[in-house]
Length: 280
Ligand SMILES: CCCCCCCC/C=C/C=C/CC(=O)SCCNC(=O)CCNC(=O)[C@H](O)C(C)(C)COP(=O)(O)OP(=O)(O)OC[C@H]1O[C@@H](n2cnc3c(N)ncnc32)[C@H](O)[C@@H]1OP(=O)(O)O
Picture 1 (cartoon, helix red, strand yellow):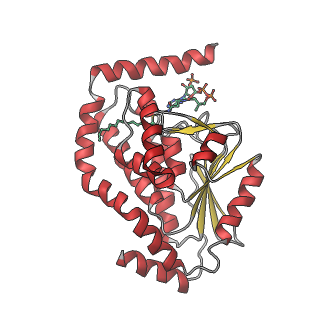
Picture 2 (cartoon, protein in one colour):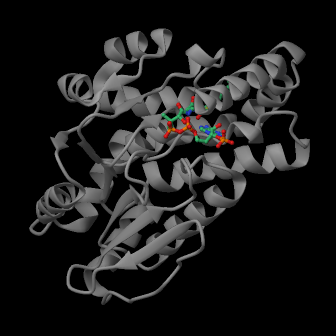
């Protein structure tokens, strides 16, 4: 908490620096006038989160923190998919060293995004199942385009959403709605998501979403950054600490979980069903 406060106070005195962390899978641009960064996921066809994409995103978030960013918009280069969630191939017959690196990077990406000192907006311009929903939930504000779906659907895949996925959803929609959403693995339509507060605004176009995102950032023009950050930390810090404490234990459980032959069979069948869908 104290460190974050010191960092936040530094924001008041340091001029904004420009920098570039763009990579092949995450394009980063900075609006020179506002200092707001836009990170665009660009891993066709569905921005599934593999180790390489997560590593780039994680590094981008670290750089934004280091450079005292004014804010971040997280969005997708696809017109139909924000992110299809974790790359299922990272969990299918995995190489265990890579699998461990993959989960460690996912955990760190979440810590960096959910706990960022700078304001964050997800412009959800397409479907956002599972890990895609997690990324959106990790931001402070979600603006979604109409006619897509969003949710933590892990139970439908025979998996369990880790506790920090659940905590991120609870932070947005409360315990009751989270329990219902998780046990049913529901994917919400945009309008349903708006109704329960899973997203904050629904818009018709990406331009409109970007305009609304600008209005969200404007709210902080007259708020001292250290007060903003400390308030966010007081609300989200416990969720982050819980993961930090249980990281190793979670990795052991995840390792045992993924090596279960029945789960591997189920994942194989799910991948097949996704392929079949394309052939129809
Ligand atoms: C404490 C310890 C215990 C806890 C245990 C925890 C256990 C582990 C927890 C797991 C958590 C998992 C979270 C996840 O994120 S799992 C991923 C879930 N994602 C999904 O179910 C989404 C699947 N995809 C879709 O529904 C659609 O693709 C959609 C996003 C709606 C886009 O549809 P469309 O535009 O029609 O595209 P296609 O379906 O045709 O897909 C195009 C190609 O992309 C491939 N694809 C899709 N999704 C994924 C994915 N997530 N990973 C890898 N690949 C994916 C799809 O197969 C097509 O491939 P191809 O062209 O080769 O046929």
